[in-house]
Image 1 (cartoon, rainbow, N blue to C red):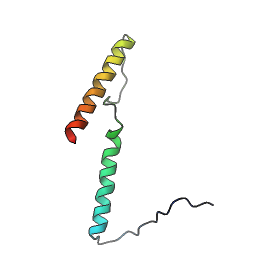
Image 2 (image 1 turned 90 degrees about the vertical axis):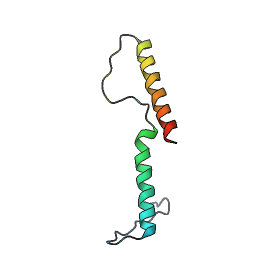
Image 3 (image 1 turned 90 degrees about the horizontal axis):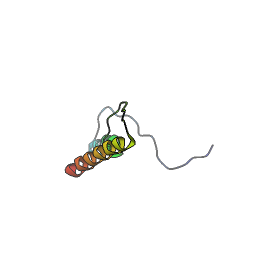
Length: 74
């Protein structure tokens, strides 16, 4: 078996300290940004379009709105 990396498992504690809280918040922030960071703005579902041009216009509109929303967050 080959070991890759140097990360170690942290023991679960009943009472946390400031360092544990900081690492937990950093992990929370990374999880929160993970899903929408790669989003194209399109909601899940089945979309039906009469033409390819209509589909492409919808895709570009959703992408523009998602990029504008991300710009407002920063």
